Length: 169
Ligand code: HEC
Ligand code: HEC
Ligand code: HEC
Ligand code: HEC
Image 1 (cartoon, protein in one colour):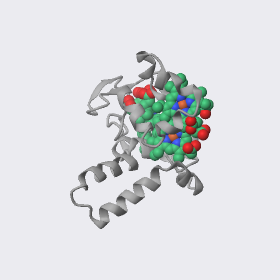
Image 2: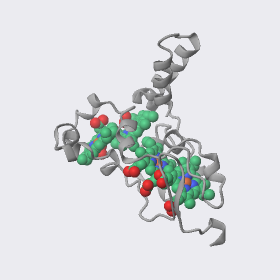
Image 3: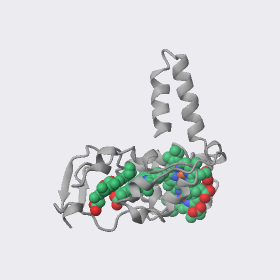
Image 4: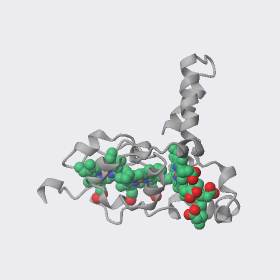
């Protein structure tokens, strides 16, 4: 998220690049460069989310990023409202429709890096269908198998719920 915010600031600040703007941009770029992040051993604390999402503790997409200090909140926002809602009706701050996944991942993992492995050929020189595969098709097992809640991932509106609160079970 840091990265995309950085890019937004960059676009807007083209007209008036202030010192503060430059500082922010510097931070955003450092945050996105994988080597810079992994050099500092800043494991992140996801325990707040594991209270309810315990099954993500061993999940690969989570684990590989956690080691580099990229936690749930870097991708899904701090999600305070969501985390403290005992009824589970408030959505997390950031959700991803299928179309948003690859551009988000590629904010940090650039095309040049990805084409280094043959495994990514379907994405870049595959059929039109293959070019739309989300990164998460192959990376991690990040999807929930069953849902008790469903939100519109763009607007955050609750569109389906089994109505059962955590504390009623
Ligand atoms: C905020 C930046 C950032 C975002 C966003 C991000 N990653 Fe990463 N990712 C990293 C860093 C840093 C590492 C660890 C250093 C490295 O291997 O590049 C990493 C590691 C990985 C690895 C392991 C690389 C290896 O060498 O084994 C995979 C696979 C991966 N990410 C996939 C994804 C996918 C899929 C997404 C989107 C769901 C994503 N990443 C989003 C920064 C990011
Ligand atoms: C068709 C399956 C597939 C898709 C789709 C896919 N990957 Fe991969 N990717 C792999 C495999 C297999 C490897 C090599 C083994 C590993 O590291 O997991 C790999 C390796 C990687 C690596 C580490 C090596 C490198 O090139 O730096 C990163 C980072 C990565 N993928 C990110 C992504 C991102 C980001 C996307 C979406 C834009 C994506 N992958 C889509 C299969 C896939
Ligand atoms: C590197 C970025 C990244 C990190 C770190 C990350 N997520 Fe995600 N998360 C995503 C993306 C992208 C999707 C959409 C995946 C899809 O639809 O295939 C997603 C989807 C989800 C979903 C919904 C899955 C579904 O079935 O719709 C849940 C729940 C979730 N994440 C929880 C977590 C939790 C909890 C953590 C930390 C323990 C976490 N995520 C860490 C990027 C991330
Ligand atoms: C009090 C319990 C609770 C806590 C704490 C919690 N969640 Fe959730 N979360 C839920 C419930 C309930 C769902 C709906 C799961 C389902 O459909 O069964 C959910 C779903 C999600 C989804 C899926 C959204 C989608 O795309 O449909 C994401 C992403 C997510 N949580 C992220 C987080 C993150 C990040 C944290 C920590 C900052 C967190 N959650 C902490 C209860 C919690």
